[in-house]
Image (cartoon, rainbow, N blue to C red; front, side):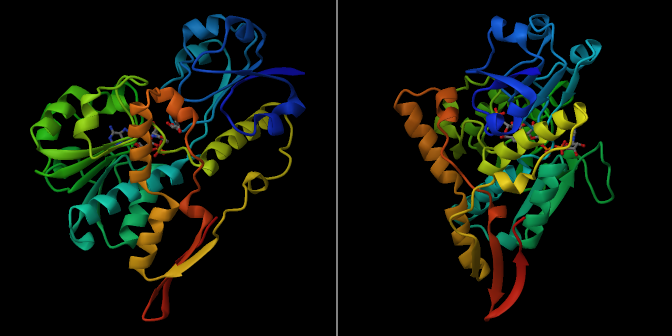
Length: 358
Ligand SMILES: NC(=O)c1ccc[n+]([C@@H]2O[C@H](COP(=O)([O-])OP(=O)(O)OC[C@H]3O[C@@H](n4cnc5c(N)ncnc54)[C@H](O)[C@@H]3O)[C@@H](O)[C@H]2O)c1
Ligand SMILES: O=C(O)[C@H](O)[C@H](O)COP(=O)(O)O
């Protein structure tokens, strides 16, 4: 029997992992030394730094799972040197982040009176999130430019080529040394005047001091979900950013539960077992399952599914009420993904195309 030590906010842990042994839960960013000393399996979120100091306290550890897409909180080199198996949950909340960015783009476009087909959006990092976003924006008739040097696909361009061309620049690269401050004073200066920068990947990708100067100079606008020094952040951004949120872009019901499910499947494989059931069993039925309308109507309905402006207001009100970044993340309201809804677009009464839920 295994001792499984899991982040207290991770959903479905009791339901899925009890068959493997005993479950211990930890609150906050770090487990206690007593818990670490017992753990065979460690299940974390992005807020727990799994580094040499943590690993030194966990001599029995054989399996580490992070219910996240990002892995920059894992010291993979040290984990592998110690012969510990590790895994994350690639793509688990990619649709939720795509919903977040789409809501930001559509509400910004409406608010600034720009014409949707005249908009050019630049996507930096065209992996699980970037490619989903690109497909959705293309379907709405928005011009999309892509930058992803590691993929080097035909038609992709460099960041330097992209910056002066785009009205919206949205970042979807991994955190870590290779992307550290890839957007700084020089790159921001190369953007179009009045452009919107969206950062929902990792705070370290944007030099926050340079961003503050760029915003103070009125050069452009920003929508931010992540910050360089989380859970702290530069509070000047509250007065400067169009919308900001406390690292919740991926926090849909589906995204969180899929993350735990992917770790369950990985532990089953690691133990030579077959998973029981399938992920769909663990999703509650959505309140609304199907919507039909013109593109304009469905766009308005989109704000009922997810509206970034509500999260911005909830974050600001929470801060004013004295709540911290982490406390607010813990109490984030439950949110469904666009994918929970079948959407049919009609024009002059005829079906144009449908977006099926999955
Ligand atoms: N805010 C949130 O709640 C939230 C949720 C999920 C993921 N994320 C972050 O978003 C990141 C992207 O997620 P994903 O699922 O698309 O990951 P992914 O691994 O599927 O895609 C990342 C892409 O970035 C590309 N890339 C790497 N370095 C690059 C560079 N220097 N320039 C341009 N492209 C580069 C890669 O080739 C890859 O295609 C994650 O690593 C994570 O840090 C944030
Ligand atoms: O990389 C990810 O998947 C996200 O950053 C993740 O959704 C952040 O949420 P957390 O793990 O902190 O709950």
